[in-house]
Length: 326
Image 1: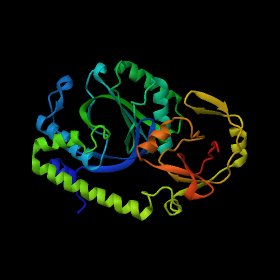
Image 2: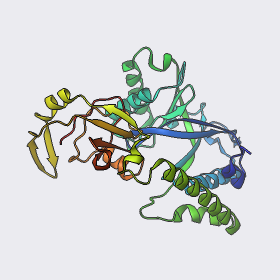
Image 3: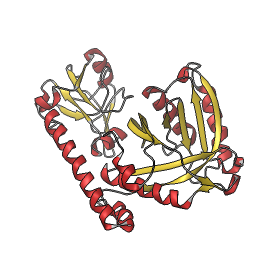
Image 4: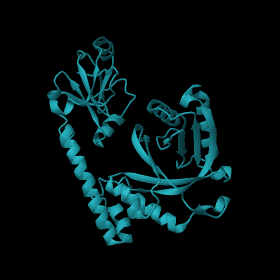
């Protein structure tokens, strides 16, 4: 009936869920956030989430991460009356929601300034929040660096910047490596500590979610990326062979530590798109990259070739030109 079953299991308010843009490990994609009131106690530096609420938030985060197979789920609430030293959060308010390209450009600017992808913008309907948990980066330097980034953004970023605020983030995260814990053992432990019955109900909900995923994978061919049928529903981007030729005749191929210059002919054909990454201008299938990591995480892919059934696997965005080695 439109209820958040995970919130029901954990005993937290239903809240309001928004679908926006998430950012992590250098890439952006779709993400969901749920907003609801959190009871606090204390004042200023001693202001914290009430213990009973904190326990429920941690439990809800573990259930969500387990049921939806997430690497991490974060919960936090801002406190704006804290000292500058403890203000590890930045809130940027804009006249409208940020576009995927704007989120990516802000994320890239943060990386360029602070040399880390861990400062990931969190989507708001009218801006973004960024949390600093980077070792060795004090909050004042974080604030000063972000001000420099703001000055470099275009005037129409987000339809115009309304406000830049700083706050102390109260909250935590639950996380697990699914390669080391293929059955979600870390999350199961947190859930089972509440009750074995709750773990059983979380198992049932996860099974239902996975059944829906399998149904859609079968319907749209997500489980068979090498077939023409699987690719037929994906976006297609025409490739400019002249630009391919200019690029591929002068670009290096990197394979391990060996480097050589490409002399192979450019390919002219179609790119079959199924990836959330939105900022690719070229791709070398021999070189390690963040796009390859995305493929390994199963976030999506693009197939490149004249025949879908034999196309080469790579990442990219529909509507762009993709120089590649062939």
